[in-house]
Image (cartoon, rainbow, N blue to C red; front, top):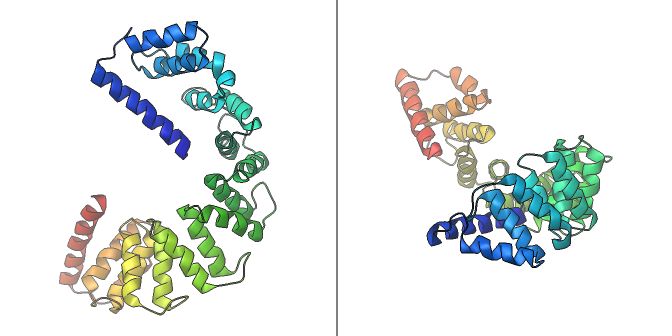
Length: 320
C-alpha cells in the first residue's frame, strides 16, 4: 500500500471519527447535502457520496450503491484509481479495469499499483513483462516504490534481461528518496561490485542509511562490516550494537552473529549463557549454526539453564 492510499485511509478514518463526534446517522444533514449537490450535477459530491455509502459514513453501509455512484462519475472526476482501490475489496478484475484507465492517463499511483497486480497475478494473469512496463512508467515519474521494484526486476532478471547497472540506477533513485530496502540493496551491489565498482565504503554508507531506518538485514550487514573492518575501522562494539538491533527484530543471521560475539567475547564480555540464549533464538528462526557450535563446547548445566532463562527474557522483550 503506497502513501497516497494511506492518506486516503486517514481521510476516511477522519470522516468516520467526525461522524461519530457529530452524531451522523442515516439520513444525516451531511448525506442530504451531498445528495442535493449530486442532483445538481456535482460529480465530486456524487463520488464522495459513493464513498460514504461504501464505507458507512453518515449512512448505513451499501457497497453496491456506493460503487455504482462512484462508477458513474469516476472518469469525470479523474478518480479511476480511487475506485479501483475500493474494488480491490471484492472484485480484483474490476480493480484492474479501472486502474488501467487511470494508468493509461498517466496516473503514477495507478501505474505502480497496476504493475503490482501484474507482478502478483491479482485480478489479471501474472506477467513480469507487463509489471516491468508499468513499473517503468511510474518510476519515470519519480515514484520511489516503483523505482525500487524496477531495480528488483533488473537485479533478478524478471520481465527483463538481468542488468545490474540498471538495477543500481533504479535502486539509487529510490534510495535517494529514502526507501530503506533500496538503500540496503544498493549497499549489497557496492559490497559485491555488481553493476558498480566494488566499494566497501559506499556499501557501508548505504547499509547505514537503511540500518538507521530499522532495516534488519542492513543492520546485520553493517554489523558484519564493523566486525571485519570492511569499509570502516574494525570496531567490535559497533558490530555488537548493530547485530543487537537486527537480532531483536528476529533476524536469524544477526542472532547467530551476536551469539558468536558473546561466545568469543568480542565487543562484549564473554558470556556463554548469553551466547546460548541467542543460539536458541537463531535455531528457532532457521539458523542452527551457533547452537551446533556450542553443542561441541562443554557447557555446564548452569550455563545451559541460564541461557534458557535468558532466551525467554529476550523473547518477552522482542515481543514487547
